Image (cartoon, rainbow, N blue to C red; front, side, top):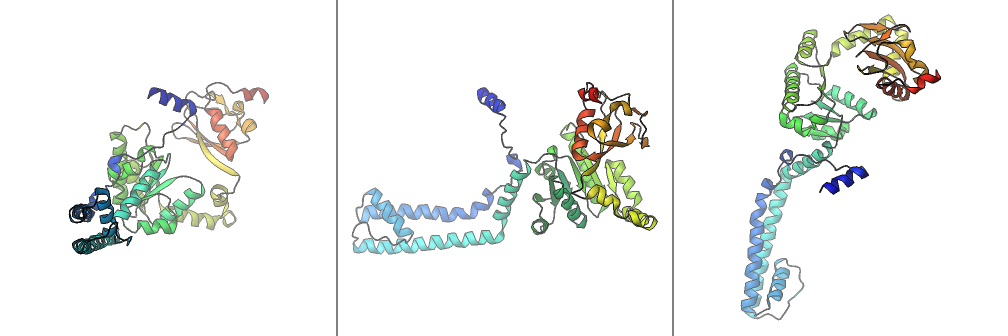
Length: 376
């Protein structure tokens, strides 16, 4: 076994993750109605085989074969010529077979019409897909906001799961192209386990009810403590009033978005500067825009700590620009000059191409002074 593990590590083979069997819904309880037709089938086959052996003196294999083709009414004929008693026995066997098959088909149609077995099989297949996700977002409750959020996540290739307790979620998932979804109560621990929350990047609570969002945030923070996760989840929530925004932040939400406030800010910005109406949207949210803007965290061990911004030569090496610095205490410096110090655990607001920003991240996280500084 150890040799097999070493071979897998050497070849960089990864075992396909599978969901915990305890999370998978059981199919077998819904197959109980099929037990009676199965028992009757075995019983009729047994009676038929014994009857042909006793009445017609057939060899055992011939008796089994004759019973099978008679019971299933396939019409292959007789293995050996039958006596009058054997023919009467065969007629009764055909009637019994027809009755058993009719009852089995009736039970099958009835169970399929209920839809429970199909729903369970779909959920099991969905759980196998979800368990393979990493750094995804769990979006709770379907509404108009969810539709827009999922559209943006899909365009940016960010994996996500939508959870909603209503049965219509299956239709909404098809209509709005949700690749992963669950019909469940979002705040329940079982739902979080099924959504593979332990591998998720964060959770987005978009319920129109403030009580639902409060329950979600509290449940997620409790889930973190009970499962001893190495890092906290990034929780985004929505709220209508400013008072609700403060409540959700105190409960543990990292970001709370108020649609009312955002609408007011957008309208006022359009009124004050009509020519700048679509600048932010075009710059930050357009998919084919070559420029991007991100905050980059500077760890304690970074070589850039206590260096002047101009000494880091970030602009020359990565072709990006630092347009803001957020200090550890939350103080923000806009358009910092070259003499500003890069301090421990600050955040650099960087603008540039996605490739340049990725290079900047790698540069800042190095412990030793990078070799590229020798050429600038």
